[in-house]
Image (cartoon, rainbow, N blue to C red; front, top):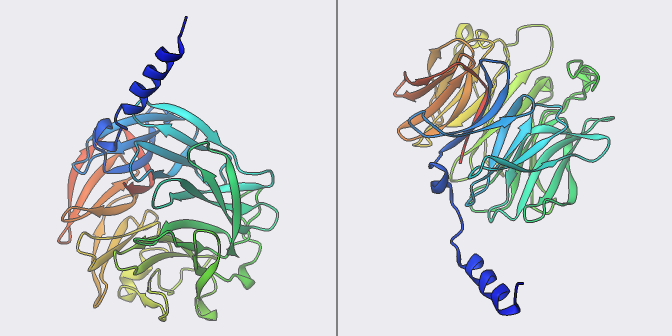
Length: 356
């Protein structure tokens, strides 16, 4: 029989235990989803040297992940349009719970925690209209506690600005047919935007592209320590575009659009699948799995070089440069314009590698 004194002693002992940190699960530096050689799917914690820190099975194809700022807790998002986001205890490999969007909405593959980790923000669409929503989830109970508008259609990526709970959202501007997820219903009237929101949903700022670039869907984001936002774009339509695929923006200023020389630019095939700053913050890269290449730019001086590799896509900041993943199982280090293979396995890495 448990006595009151025994219960209190047990409770105090339990609460005195130190909380687990990311170091307790192998010290991963990144999260990345992959398709295994047998066709199954998993979320991996990866170290900067390309080695595995942990692996957790997923029920279907994953896209991006979100790591808690202190606890070894990850959320794996289904590829859009997604019906699930799995909350994973990375210390045990156990799925704590599955988040499901409200009826009539779906996840768009990305999310981010608040600065203190108490709240998770998820990027969502209202299925009927493609109007963007940010879902708000309490990370203690995983109850959904609210949502607010992204002030645009088809949002995809979402990041928190440095030293703040303000958010930046990539509103792609696309209204899509949910039955196919491929048919764009509003090519002529697309209005992509880069939207800045407070953590409680107030519109702080919004940058729209020139009307001549309305078919350039803003898709993916990277943020530098001083708040400079880099955004990657994807051209919508049948023709190969000359429109830029990389932009830089800081609140209160006009965007700067960068692109390589015409011949090299066309080899990107109108598609930038991921984006990252290097460790110095002075260089930024975009990748194109369709073009089998990544392009590196100096944030001041423009195009530097291209790196050729089949199905290359995932990019994230790494010590001395960037880390890169591809659909053939490769993990590489990008430094000074060169790619060095770190690891290779029978996996097809999905589009993103997310820094913790």
